[in-house]
Length: 556
Image 1 (tube, rainbow, N blue to C red):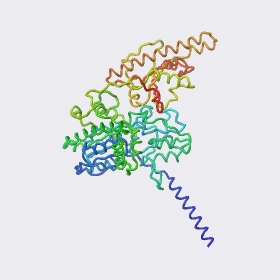
Image 2: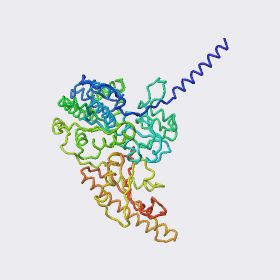
Image 3: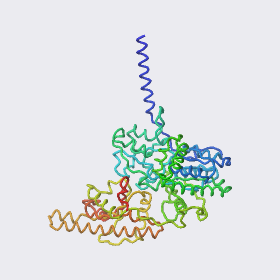
Image 4: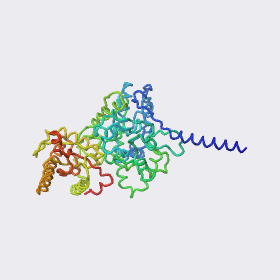
């Protein structure tokens, strides 16, 4: 009997070890274009009332629009994007709900069926809900070259990594993607293999970076219980114009029911206006506010008791409204429009193996004047950007940061930076001569809309170094003169850059662009060995600085 008990105990221990080992198994998936995954036969739309939503703060306004009778139909939750695309192909819904990247990937699958997918409405930008977490081996964006990056396949973070690599000047072919089926952690009690990038990052030290939602990023980087050495590189609070959420519709349905679809879009716009007002005034309208949170929680999270969780989700997104939709789809007033995002996404997705080839994606070409009827905040032309920050406070913050840096500010940054080289004694920077540099810089600046931009002037240190060797007593004066000159150049570049953006029809918030004269403090080549290295010390650097957690310090 004793031997039997011992045997039972050993078996129990072995079973426990086996179960733990099984639970730790990491199950990745292979990236395949949706055109190869969605093989269903195309059918005509049989349920035009079915409207998909996903678990995202922006979809709360859709629930609000339905509650107010501004849209009609039946909302259903479908976070499995492959299933959602299959339902659209099968005619179970005319719509697809996803990020710009998800919609572009789906467009290829529908094009293979003989129809196109037409983006019709933009709900939000992600402005804090999504995060890049890296290990301490990643000091700057270019360090991602040759590394392993974990993320969900057919999810929102495909958009984010595409832009990150683009601005880091790292080709998707130069990294190893580790793809997962799920976005976040499984529910309580799950004992199966790891199918999400968050747990994979925790258990596999060969994974260098992970794209995840903010709550998971907080867990990974916690001082207690987190992953040693893991840190948040930045979130979409900084990279605030990369992940956008759309509705798209089948072209055959749009052609046959254009009035119905336009009414749906108009209802979403009215609903977003009404919900934004409610969100601003929730304290005086608590009953209505709590009601919509509860109903949204029931739809998006499966329980009406999770209204506070829905309120938290709203903090990570920014609604676009009528004006943002008009600007985005017409391409007027900003660089982060549908055409830009589509080119950016499709080019990267082909290299990432998510799409076979580029496809034609056109918007619905709405009559925005007609859609403005009944809206309180609609504007007929794109508004000039308003100044968000106090320039003097921003300038003081930057000066303090640079003074405290032991190395080059640009080299230690996790955000993109861009250089403009100039000739010795050059004082003017024409928009024609530097248009390519300015265009590249603006693209990154607009994508990382939550950062400030430091136009940083640098000078060559050769003369100062020789004076120090010779113990020249005037070296301090020469250093100060170099700093003053570098500041003057930075101011001239800033002035030309702002003028370039305005002339281009894509003006920027000037309060987010400040200057710094670094002089000879942080040369690219402290001891230039060649004439080429010497020339590269004469430069102006556009460098973005994250303000996450600090931005309120600079408000007017």
